[in-house]
Image (tube, rainbow, N blue to C red):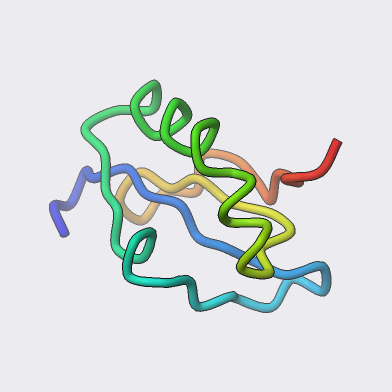
Length: 71
């Protein structure tokens, strides 16, 4: 992964990391807008895999989160 790649981590309701399917695992993005657009498109699929919240990173820097996938 590039040092400045944007990516999400996935957590359940207790904050425990969730391992998601290969369709979502390892997804990286060139910028924050692309990362946010992607999670907006797939949030229902992530929730179906047991993800309750996501956290956005740029490289090692936590940008924000955890952010709930529920209204």
